[in-house]
Length: 233
Length: 323
View 1 (cartoon, each protein chain N blue to C red):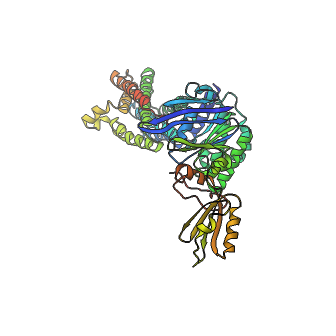
View 2 (view 1 turned 135 degrees about the horizontal axis):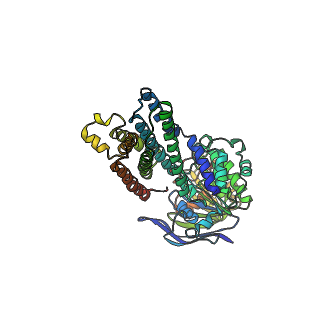
View 3 (view 1 turned 90 degrees about the vertical axis):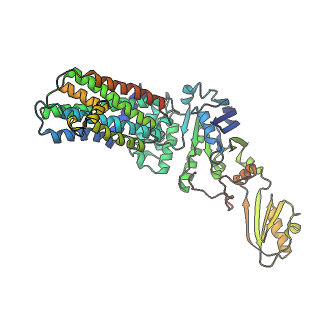
């Protein structure tokens, strides 16, 4: 317990010192506030978009970059010659990145609902969408971390995936303005499914099952693939 | 008592045989060197001993434990510095020591290690800001923070400048003085000659010799090597003149360059004999045989394909990066 507590404390400090963590908090918040001045009472678009962006940044950038660089720098290998198993470090990192995601999303909700006057989503629907979406996005990140040879290429994969996924997910322009085929395909991407579920939650309805199932499928399939292909060194 | 016992250890990666029936043992309290060129299997052998790799065949015992089956117990008692390992860039020196101390059941006081390894004024510095020598000192301190009985140090001084290398050697001597057995992996002759009680010489996946550095050097035919050139126009036949002198083991001549190998006081005999015959020579020098010569004698080649460096004080410190 002493070891895990210390590991968590040190990793938290490292995360706070990591510029990427600040970006993951600041960029979605900036977009929300910049576009949010004209937000209307019944807006159901802007907050789902910002929340999806925040989860995507942590899952696609921060998580894989951190894990791949830990492997690249031999930190996992160095741990494996101590009494601590390197799997503990991965578990602590996952928990911290999850905590960061929760914090980033909370900031957005407080700013959006509290300051900008957007209305609140249905709690159950929001929670389901958030959990499934985070699991799906993290599984993409874990797969990147498993396959990328080093931190820099993990970052590159993240960037390469982020923009197409954000476009397909309807984060760059409203889905109604996208070609039908792309909008349809976008619904089956992790970001598109998440944004759609969040839209549903904000519209006051129960999220449709298809996007939730899509996200769960990503989480299971990619998560397993990542676990199978992960190398410790 | 043998603290590490390796018997008939073999390991291959795919088709490539990396270790072929390697045997050696390390006695408690000694500094044991594992010497050889890059690719000789040194690191793989040590990784099998540390439990990082599973041997294909053969047995490994460390402190009487099997590194694969009893790894959890073993890892409490070994300290390791790995080649090519870094820490997170933004971790501070004290945080790394404090964290690693928490991994062990009975750690040493890391504050004392901080003092002892000259890192006290770098306590709050981030890893990325440390110099090469400071990083190396931190790695040694991290290897010792669990209060191990045996420390594995792999290519400790590779990439350091000569001054930092010598400073690091003093640290290794200090580790040993504290009663910790040290296994030192190196491809530097001078380092091994300076630090090790015994050396296993690795070449192409096998141990080709195992002895003290002095013992390995003694294995070379002659203790000293003397070379000179005849002055212009003088070209007597040196074999007849010098070959029969006491202590001379061999005489060879290439153009006007003469090389005489021998033991004891043979150099005095050679110079006196030349003077009696009124033969004038230039570029006279006498080199003591070094571990380099021993390595060439054992393997038929120099450690990194270089000729043994000249100079009476042994090989000059090298700063080349490994390939």
